Length: 109
Ligand code: SF4
Ligand code: SF4
Image: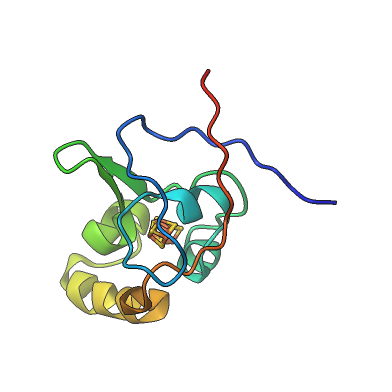
């Protein structure tokens, strides 16, 4: 049976681009399923990732593990923030573009 999670997206968030297009920070993927980083390090199993951050200035969602990882991984010494962020970027393969095939239906409520 298909699963249809209901997620709450900020009104100003950009629409999800097609697979393969550059990531625009729509946040959909991080709201519907854990990525490898969140599953392993944040015990993220369902609903929105606890590290997903809404940036009002730019009206996009950002990965908190790439911005302030120590906020979500208290065990991470501050001195390791930069190499940790480098590893997370590699792990998430951000340069390949949007890899989420989530189908989005918008409903007003
Ligand atoms: S990878 Fe795709 S679904 Fe995820 S935030 Fe980027 S554009 Fe949105
Ligand atoms: S760790 Fe970052 S990329 Fe992964 S689901 Fe959470 S916010 Fe998204």
